[in-house]
Image (cartoon, rainbow, N blue to C red):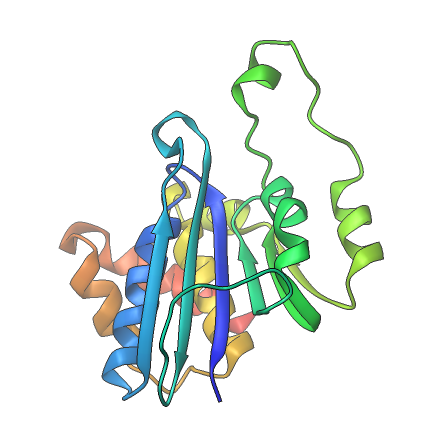
Length: 189
């Protein structure tokens, strides 16, 4: 059976890095994996989405509306934006971090209130965490994406794969230790 994961975030959060680590691990485990990424205005804090489909035989990376088994959001507004892509009964894994878009930073708009409440009203299966706070506790705020990777690996039941070697492959040696700790924290949540 094919599984569909949609990863969404804001440029600079490491969404694509996590997608590459996931895809590599799933490939090595013997799955057929297809991945597509959309950068949008990522360099300016815009949306970034990655679609990953894996299974015995996968023909396309495309996830249509109502087809995602799992939505992983690195920012809570992005989660709300992509809820319509989820299957009924699908799981949302969301980082509760707020990253303000330019209009909010410029004082032209306000960041919406009650986002997590609205998400929880719409969905039955929501796993939420403040990955940035956990990463900051570990001394490296940029490892929030790896906290999310650990959480997602555990939630998907794919924790039997050697994810540590994938983290080491895609990240510089000087940040291996902190990112391995971030991954382990994510798995333990």
